[in-house]
Length: 240
Image (cartoon, rainbow, N blue to C red; front, side, top):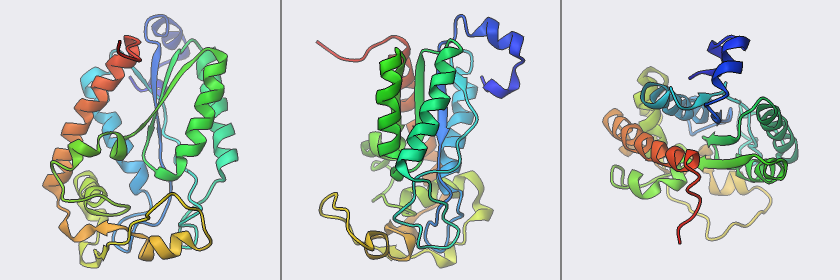
């Protein structure tokens, strides 16, 4: 259930049994010339709506954190960049307060690759408090599922464009969709990486996207996310 929709008294009662929360995290960032700046916010938002419908009685859903680490693409207009160490500390403090309010399992539903280092650092610190923290990077963790629907993936590419078309096709300017087939050969940090690899703030083939693919992605991946959440709740962290 959406945390902000309940009263303080109701929260105090329900948190006795509901110990897991989803914290959606995105970014405000350029995604090619055809997608809105809020692309990385919208996908976690759709997933949260689906989680609310399907399992809203066993998980809390926190308000989304809209800003993220977007150094690579900060050269493009409209991108808002928060340094990793600042984002990590902020997310940790949010998680710490949730933990102090009685929530044990904190699941970061991440919509943006640049946030990963910060979320990992925050999770390490939360673990030390006694919380259980997990980051779900939906486009990576369920990549095999997504690639049964799309030919490829990318920043503002086929998968993300299809996702936003499903969310609100009026926000997408498909006549500006293009292709950028450049792919990094390693996780190398170098000057102008964003300009070189993510030419036009894009990677992949956005021209192949359509709304139906987006619908299929959200349907399939939301089921996978629910499977992961159930494993977290049952503390199925490993196999023998």
